Length: 115
Length: 111
Image (tube, rainbow over all chains, first blue to last red; front, side, top):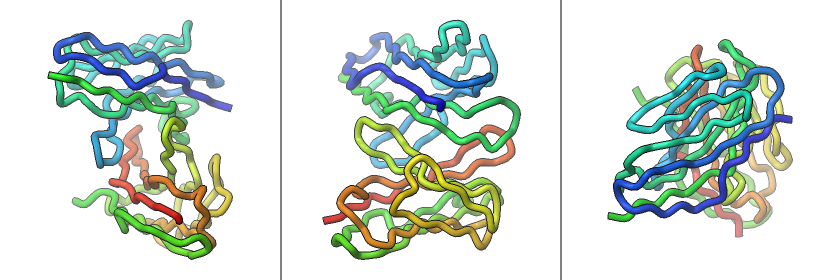
């Protein structure tokens, strides 16, 4: 079945440092890929998405590129802020289009940013 | 526009007790689902529904029941709670594009 693997956490950074959270996936066909963010005490929010190979999703200074050749969707940010402290989840849905694809999540990566 | 509303936010149960976690949405989304979140395991799908009267099992359905009598509501029932069901539960809906909307969660402790 489909699976998503994220880098081991937690990750602790100083403000303005660069961030990379690795994500690789296993899926048949052409899945859609997502990054979700969960702030303390809240539900999950969609951060960015990509629906086909070489697409780049971006939002709030975060970016991720859909790399089919390496089955990866790494999350990057050039300069993190304290307010970015949260749990980040990589996820996929099978296939493309607007099907009712079920979300499969990675295990989550806790990011803590210190002033 | 409330989105997805989950109740209660917190609950403590004794082993063997039953309860229902409520999920209501006002976005007219056909797809609704329940996930549980456990440390180091991400979110795992319990049950889902693609419309009123239609439900199906996800990855970890044992110990949970669901029904979908209306588009708006998708309750999750624990018939006989066990400590292994201690978790944070999220309801999520999906609209016509890729937009999943999550509720704020229910933190359940079974003692």
